Length: 419
Image (cartoon, rainbow, N blue to C red; front, side, top):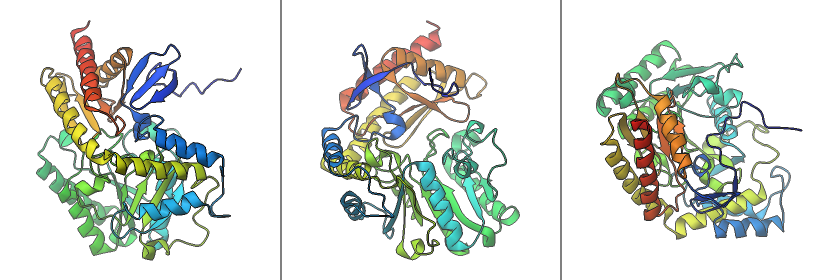
């Protein structure tokens, strides 16, 4: 009998048999509030009727039309529609399946376009699990350990994380930019640096937002030295942060945007966007892949974009995000072990630390597990697993937030009281 790999650790014991909106149901039809959204993937909720209908219709027409062999209608329509939402100036797309693949496509384009070898990433960033993507990842050793040597040409500079450094945002940003200059002076000369790669909000790193001043500093240095700014919007895109792109909060002005996760409501689809002038610098034959831009996934992405626009889900993310953050802050105010509630839109983390101020992954994990027992599915993040994150589907309603925070409050109290 075959079984799953023993190193695949499940965050909860739930075996889901169906999903609807922000809910999952098990074989006994027990309902769970799913505030993970498949790690930010099911942006329109589980099985949104419009997405289901689009996928079902496409399955009956064409499942796979390999897009370097033949074109297909859902792909052409999707490219056209993305022109409505892509950041200004980014008008060429390449599609793949996963975030890691898209990151590697951005890496390849940056190196080929600039003829430079090095990439500067920022501490706490998560960019994927494949060898190159893991080499760019610094949110935890579990993503990059045990299969060295990793890819060369990667240098790490600080991300402006006030909680980690213990300074105000302005001071932390100034420090991060000074250290970036030091990195360019001592580790990777501008003439060797192809790109800066950064998340607008650290994902696995603990949902730490960047700042407008930090992105302005990145843009200034990129323009001065001919370095490309690559913004990883895999988790922050498609309305997750209360704006369509996470970088919109900070006037990011990317040269390359990487997208995946919420793009197709659960169907595997990812991509990179760049300007025509930049994309044409990619070497012929350097972009491709068997399953990229799958016809059913593209149809689902078109339906996802329809739902986001028709139902005002970006605005809902901002509104419900404010409600959620405020309610979680009220819970945190009752428990000194929760030292921070942070994030943007529907991307909120609660950080646990012990009496000495040390990140407390053990307590965070216990609360996450207690919440699952009570019907609320959550995930941990942060370098020590010290954060519990809330990432519900963008269709989440006011009462869903009230219910989720009520379970959270009970779970925190139960664990911290030793009940």
